[in-house]
Amino acid sequence: MNKNESKNTVEEKVKKQLKKTVETKDEYTKKPILDNLISKKDLENLKIKKEKEEKDKVIYTAKIPIIKNPFLEKAKQYIPIVNNIKNKYGIPRPFILSIIQKESSFLPRAKSRSGALGLMQLIPRYAATEAYIYLYNRKPNPMTLANELYNPEKNILYGSTYIYLLHARYFKFEKDYAKRKYMVIASYNMGPIAISKRVRGLNLEKMDLKSLYNYLLSNTRKETSDYLKKVLNYEKEWNKIFP
Image 1 (cartoon, rainbow, N blue to C red):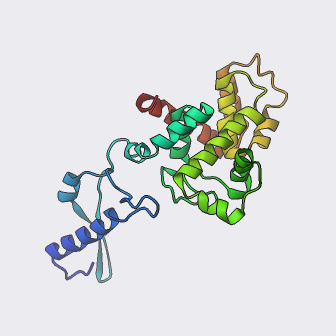
Image 2: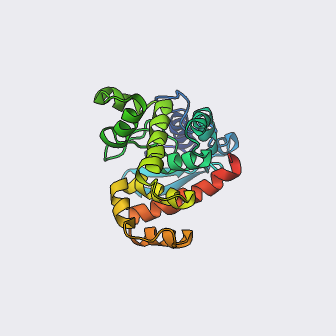
Image 3: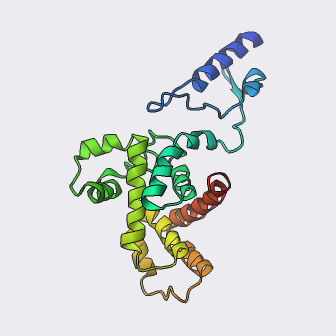
C-alpha cells in the first residue's frame, strides 16, 4: 500500500483483496476453495497488521484462522464416491481419505512437479494406466486418461483400484492385513518394486507389526517414512468420523 493512504483506505483494499481470495472457485467443483473453512465472524472482525515498510510502500497482512479439521467439509462431497469404492474393493473409507488428504489436501485439480494428477495424485503412465488396464482390459488413450484424473470420481476409482492391486498383486504374500497395509502405504509413495526389494528376505511371519513399521521407517527414504507416519495418523482421525 502507498504510505500516504489512510487507515480506512488500507482496510477497504485489504478486505477487497481478501474477498476476492475467499470467493475464488475450484475449477472442477465450481465452489469457493475456502468454502466452509473460515468463519464469517473472523471475516467481519478482520485484524490488519502493518508488517513492514519498503521505500514508499507499506506491507500489511491479515490472518484468518482455518476452522478445526479443515478437510472435513471438503471430504464430505467425496463420501458417496468413497462408499462405492468400499463396496467394490472393501477398502476402508478412512484409508482412502487419509491417502487423499496426504496426496492433495482434497484439491481435485492438484498437480505435482512429477506430473501426478488429481485427488489421489496419480501419474498417468504408471499407476493410473495399471488401474485402467485392470478395469477395462485395454490400454488407455494417454491424453484422455490425463484429463480423467481431474475428475474426482474417476481419480478415486483409479487410485483405489491401484491400492487394491498393491494389496492383491504385489503384496498378496503377506496374509496379515495390517502388515500388508504398511507395505501398501509405503509403496504408494515409493513404488511397489522398491518396497518389495526392501522386505525381501525378511521373516515377516515372525516379525510383529511394530517391528515391521520401524523397519520401513529405517529402510526407506525420509519422504516415504514421513509419508507412512502421516497417512497412519490421518487414518486414526478419519476413523473417528467415517469408520
